Length: 234
Length: 234
DNA sequence: CGCCGACTTGTTGTCGACAATAAAAATACA
DNA sequence: TGTATTTTTATTGTCGACAACAAGTCGGCG
Image 1: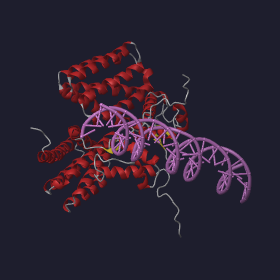
Image 2: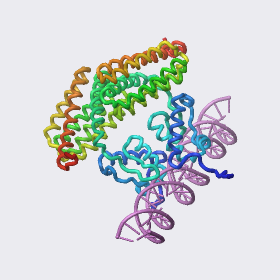
Image 3: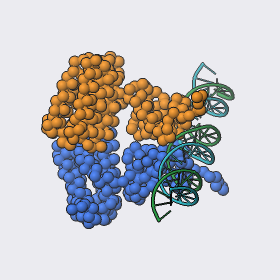
Image 4: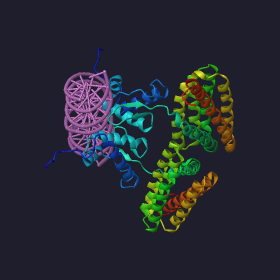
């Protein structure tokens, strides 16, 4: 069985999506540092693919703003835009509210199971003090709620924003303590109840409060960091 | 000066974007019918480009949902999803409100000039009964307001939704009369005033009313069309 | 006469190579 | 020695060709 043909690992047509998903994850999880160059040749070697499918994956990533291509020059992993964080927070808060509202209005009973499962995963991650797992499962939890709301446009924007947030949280994840996350577990529980009860306004209120919590938490990390590095001239 | 070299019309690096923008426009303006196949070879001939840049443009269009690629099979212009129109209208209304609010809050004085200019263009299109021009300039007007609001995420989603709406409006543009559009001119004027006065709540109210107008107008076209074609079993 | 399978054909996915561009390096000159 | 200019080099954008896949076509068999 010495079948050492140079057989491609990926099936035809699935090469680009695997590259896309792999890189996407690595960017969000900061395995690829913001600002670091993305070399097509290098990726070509790594995935054992030609540069063409690599490039198509990069085009998709660029469309999402995860990488930035300087024409005819290099292409880099997009920097985290601290000046534009206000926009992210504003949109993120709105999406928290809208998706939770819609979930309360539009969810099917079967949706609840999935949401509950993810909430449980989040809870166990919190108890295990698995910070990285917390960040990931928290994201999945809210995406599941958004999907129960059944509006593709909100879900798309929301996931984009949450993933943007994941990058930032990764930066400061060492600052996490186990007090706030435990609070999140309770807030999630309340949100699930509001959704089940189809209490739209209640879901809205809880989502808004939850968003404010998270935003102010991230904000405090950043300002603390700013003070440390003294980036702001007085 | 018989410099008849087979000189490419496009500068290096701008081939894909021209293809992307051209196709995007043609899809939105229904010059390419929904469901019609998109042949790469054909486009390659038409733009005098290799299939590679064509493909990259198609990947971008697919990411926006304007075309649908069946793996290893054909790729078609995305159909207009009438069942998903509710989602579009919901998100569209919210974006109308949010972007106009933010414009009132965040605009710079210089933004007003551009908005005014587009409003004028819209007005002249209405007076000239240039329906297609109306649809286009109306879209540009609201995008300009959104840009004055200075939130990239809202602007992106809003343009996507407005363009989606443009496709639908094109379908029914023969149904347009000149009564409603004239009303829009006045509503636009009020919105500009609210923005200038930084009247956030007022801008919100006006935008919401404006959105409701448009949505119900489109809805009426569609239901009228449904009755005509008797698509619904009794 | 109708169903199943091999073959043909058209289109997509992938490949390796070439050309153009811009940054970096090397050289010339004051 | 410092600056301007040319040369080199690395990387991108583009190209034409091949391979794989799916649909349509044709022929064989019941």
